[in-house]
Image (cartoon, rainbow over all chains, first blue to last red; front, side):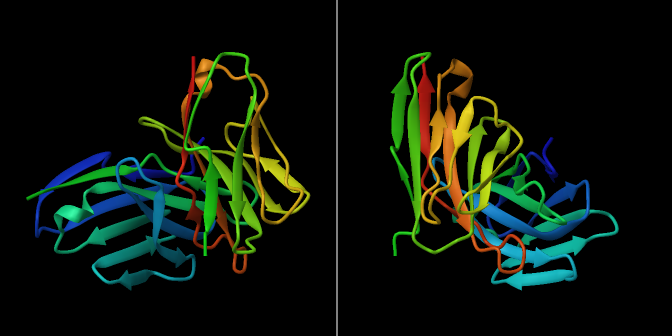
Length: 112
Length: 114
């Protein structure tokens, strides 16, 4: 079964608001990554956070990782229409035994 | 720098036909993988490889074969296509410097099996 699960499945907000989506996973990991997928396109890497890190920033993105709760969150601040996409978390199990697995994604819609 | 190149972009097969999806990367990445994406299911890992001569099964390997004879290429073979294999297929690669690093994705192959 899939290692990571995003929540919510869908999110619709107004342009300019912040968007938060969460990812929960089941077993110990080496790192956790977030990806964006625009409709009909491939996935694009957004940010990687390692298991010994708690928070990471990249532009308008903020990612947190709580290994005790086996969860991560992705915050997009000051959202724009161009942020409309699906967002996926991906995890690699400690030891890398099962490759890199993805959750089912959060579909984010930014209303203009 | 081409990155990850997938061919073809679209393919229609009849049930029982065979075909190979091609994937090549020019970044000298150790890790290469194939995913399929179905509506509401996210990406599911089919097969992956951590180096030439090494392959392993992912979550949904049945009906697919892979080989990794070179670092650059990782073809995915459908030996006898079934309608259940209708999906969008993505190839991806990454360095393994510190565990699984940033994945680079190809543009995808949309496969329909009639």
